[in-house]
Length: 143
Image 1 (cartoon, rainbow, N blue to C red):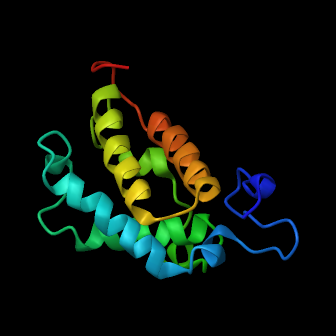
Image 2 (image 1 turned 120 degrees about the vertical axis):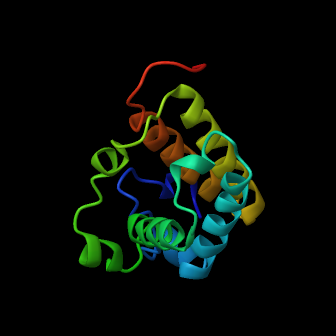
């Protein structure tokens, strides 16, 4: 994937064939593995784990569906749930800089473990960094 392949809207293409990140990484299985790796870290995190239900199947399914759609795959997430409204959906949780940093550390580890090439990894991490920062709704914790 070329360096100019990453666009802010998630509809990333290779500039020649219109290949999305979703297609480039092999589709839904890539995002399922990414989300599984992320939640493996969350499960052992004393700060983040209490923010999630005991059964992580629902959060895994929703995050996978959202990422699949965002990165150019099927729109099943929005078809079932409507607009993502990320800030609204995260409003019930206290998300400060510490929580953002913990979330981002687990997602960064998942991206690193994913085997994605440098361009895709960079695009994913850029998106996750901005999205995680946008979820902050409380002061406190390290920046």
